[in-house]
Amino acid sequence: MEMAEIGATAAGGSNRQALSDDDVAGRELFAEWARGAGCTVMVDRIGNVFARRAGRDDAAAPVRSGSHLDTQPTGGRFDGVYGVLGALEVVETLHDHGIETDRPIEVVVWTNEEGSRFQYSMLGSAVWSGALLLESALQIADCDGITVAAELERHGLAGVVPALHTPTAAYVELHIEQGPILERDGAEIGVVTGAQGLRWFEITFTGRAAHAGPTPMDARADPVRALAATVNAVYDATRAAGDWARATFAQVHSVPASPNTVPERLTCTLDLRHPDAGTLDALEVALRDALTAATTLTGVTHELTRSSGTPPVAFDPALAQLVRDAADALGARHVDIVSGAGHDACHVAGVAPTAMIFVPCEGGVSHNEAESITPEQAERGASVLLGTLQRAASTHRSEVDR
Ligand code: HGY
Ligand code: MN
Ligand code: MN
Image (cartoon, rainbow, N blue to C red; front, side):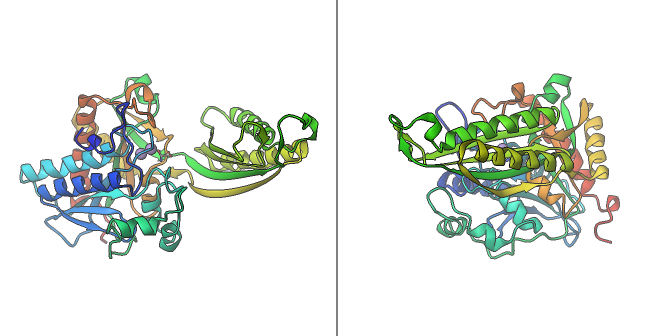
């Protein structure tokens, strides 16, 4: 709740967009708490924060756990934050009780997970895992033309440590489900076995500006009509692809945005998702076909660019079993689940054994200021994380050092 006071919105949510003053204030509060729990804090070249608690065998590959502190513009108080503060709570609990672990434990705050300001989601973990070049990430600009590099410099956050993965015994991310499944099934803990793939596109329709009055409807090259045709065709293809398929059009901008001028140009974003790569490919083909048909129908040309995304990912089965063991030790009712949302864990899974732990959130609502969990759910998830990290931080259990 103290973290939620930073960037609080009037409707009770959070607006701490990546590398904004509020995001940086949240990072500073986190670092202060982490130091208070005996951690040393390091920042890498893309601004990822690592709060490290030493282990008995401090040269051993660490166990890492974390998430993100940046939020959607009208985000909730738990998306990302819960995973960072849950991991911090684990470190504080070990510290308070003088419990040592074989391996070091590092709490991670990834830069720009949401991708709403700088439109490349899970940016910090993408660079760290090698999925995106640092130079490419640094030059991404927001809608005002301010780059990631400029913001890191402005905040003194451009750390000197290379933003590249180092041996990691295990990475476990605690997160709210952000969907309705756990609550519907009466489960207390989600053992996340993987995440669906996602692809982000930017579409530009170019028509012809014209007077809204004298110009007959069939004499127009109207980009809004091209968008409408495309949206309906993509929604139909998504419905036909089954109930796991997702298509989200957002950020629709027209130029000029004048009520009595047919727009000349229109841009919009599209977020496509599915757990199966082949189906994602088929949805992308349906998108391209829809755009071609819209151009034929309206005379409006189109340009499609892919901006970011992650393939469907399977998490580490042995680590998922540690999550089940930790949940069973607490008598928590758990089910296996595939994540509908993307997470930094999706990138980390490419370079380290990775698993996630979900707790239900009220009504499955997220990316919404009304996002909510109960203190009992928050505590239960953090306790399962504690049990999982203690198991993963015992060197006799994993062979990553061999
Ligand atoms: O887009 C996502 O799934 C994540 O919430 N950034
Ligand atoms: Mn998140
Ligand atoms: Mn999110």
